[in-house]
Length: 307
Image 1 (cartoon, one colour):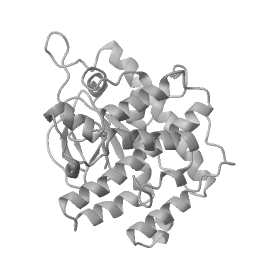
Image 2: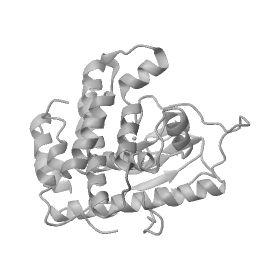
Image 3: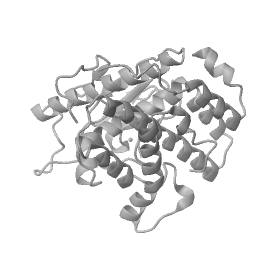
Image 4: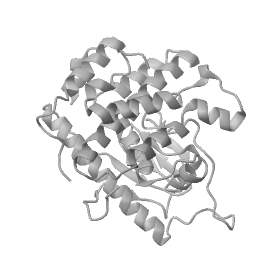
């Protein structure tokens, strides 16, 4: 990924030196990842259509969303990453500072893309904040540790990331490459897009009256849509000439490695389909690739199509 020398977002909050402690219950639940230029105004992306489709599925009035104009990458998160000496990775190391620059650049690219998409449809995109933390963090959704993995909190419109997860993605999940890491950020920003369009709020309301199995099935659709949105972002990133050979394959491999079925097989030796809440490896790859291929939000309707 040709990211060096490009604009870096000012919306990165580095809290690695003071992460931890306390609880807050101001917002909805966390959504963990189980993961230059504006988008062209002449594109056929119709954000309004997506919201209306979601309205038909959920049975609510989409005009409420249009008038008002969290999710995570991996199911259950993962453990701490340690270096060869057995100590936790030092997030203040020079390599980590370069990684911060990388994350800030990827976030800037998502800002440019989603601002263009929203503007093309008469809407205003609100940039999310991305909080870097180490070990543990307080959010409007409550307290979380790095073991939970990256997550988006709809209560404060922030993405939370302990960058040691990138080591975990490489070493534990077998998903290496810069664009695999970019996919992590883009997936969480996808949840922010869901939050801005009202889809996430309706999901949070509906799951309160659902049984566990039904809520898991709905969660899968939410997560796969975030994967598809990440693909839409990748589509426009590729158009700007930022992607290198093998980048998209790297992201697709990451999607494969963090599928519910793959993780359950790796962790416990068998799968429990009714417990899936992020989607299988095949599903995650399909929806990520679908968004990448078309660049259309209308092709990311996981609520009215088989997943």
